[in-house]
Length: 117
Image (cartoon, rainbow, N blue to C red; front, side, top):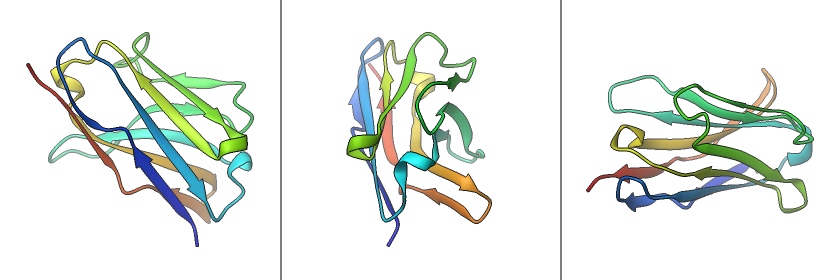
């Protein structure tokens, strides 16, 4: 049974930091591209950051570049999103996604991040 379980969300003041974790099971984690998305109320999910299967290359969206860092530990089947300098506009539900091909794509259940004074 495939599972992606996110954790680490919560409430933080502007300028604060959080680290999200996503643990995968039931599939060959190290073969998958891993991504973090976020979703604002009433909006489509948007890509925040992505990392290749071997962790050598990453992508960050312009809105988080320089503040968020994606990383992974394939030995622990875990992908991380370190979020620094958080701002109220980062408030959203954050999801991790595992992608191998169109037949093998999995999503986590999401974790809420709230940034407010």
